[in-house]
Image (tube, rainbow, N blue to C red; front, side):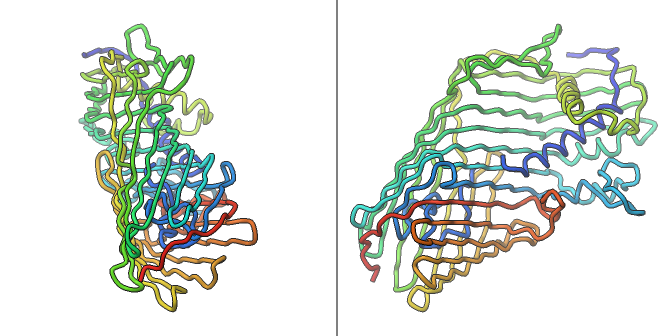
Amino acid sequence: MKRDNQAYHPSRSQAILWSGLLCCLLMTTSPLAAQQVSRTGYFMDNATHRHLLNPALNPAKGYISLPVAGEFYLGLESNMKFTNFVYPPAGGGELLTFMHKDVDANAFLSQLSLNNYLRTDIRTSLLSLGFYTGASFWTFDVATRVNLSLDLPYDLFAFLKQGMTSSQGNLYHLGNLFVSSSVLAEASLGYSRNIMNNLRVGAKVKMLVGGARIKAGLTTMDVNMTPDAWTITTNGLLEAYAKGLTLKTDEEGVINGQFDFASPGPAGLGAAVDLGVNYSPIRNLDVSLALIDLGAIKWNMAAITRATSSGQVTFSGIENFGIDSIGQQSAEDQMTILQDDLLKMAQFKPTTATEDVVERLFPTVNAGVEYAMLKNKISLGVLYSNRFMENERYSELTGSLNLRPARWFNLSGSYSFIHGKRETFGFALGFIPAIMNIYLACDYTFFHVTPQFIPLNTLTTNIQLGVSIPLGRGKVPPKH
């Protein structure tokens, strides 16, 4: 596919592209998938929801969680940071974005990776219950899960910042640009018990209801810029799994960013299991292992909308090249134009879905070792987590010091060795005053923030909050 003599205005597009991408980064730091709970609370006895990390680990007491407030988790993982995109002016005053002419291109681009990623996970418990029957522990949970993932190549930012620097033209490779998001509802039933005094096993069965899933990716997007025209070569796929969704097209059959959303409802069904074990080989030493989210979801063919981008398009008649028009549009207009310009460059055209789509979840392996001292008043723990993502693996190693001065008060401090850009100290607090169990945790405690409470030195952080009503203790046998 090749079309010529299309007027295009790169000055507007560059301004809108950078602002839209920056807005995406900032929007996802506000309360918005795979990680469901803080790792720092893995070794806490009164952390009600640590069974989300290992179904063989249960709290000392049962619980009934308050609706919504029972457990809320927000996680953010990225190799970027806010200060990659804003800079203080030399003479003082308002902060400058990376697109400002006073910000050196090499200084900005040298801070970026070849692949720049952002992952956002949100889990909200709508109803949660855990209780003992003798030594056995049961859990029932209804929750929603929202995931967002962005992969942004280095050349995308080079294109936005530098544009055409040579009179002979420039070639940018914007491939490996991916965006995905999903909304799921989950109902689960879990069970754990001792099969020996020093060996406890647990399992959880989950039913998944898919609300929506969107994936858009460009494996190839080459932008060849010359003084007279831009030639854009693309190869990509857009898939939307949502009941009642219809993407509109222009007169040439290209998706134009408008859509109809009639009669929304479940778009898919799935199932998953969690498996866990906790073993105490000698007194005061516990070794645990869990596999979380082993399963898949099937999206119904009737709810699938698919479009492809393949071929070459040439835009000629280019005018007003530069970055002087940045900031001339309102935020609402910028996002609208961003959508139009991206779709125009990618040239996505609808195709017909011919079958259901089965998509596996991103499973996580958690392996922990804990050694207790002073009659279990203090313990040292190490937790290794490995999540298998769509295009990569995400690993973290967390060490923790756990204090249990009283049954009603637990406190843990942690340090994460791999991610967090040095702001890797975490904490978890479990507090049971009378008829309430209050839990608060964060794996990456950030110390430098903007007035809007946006972390400056890292975009990797998380927070978990839970409020529940404690129930009775179980009759778990001593390990030794």
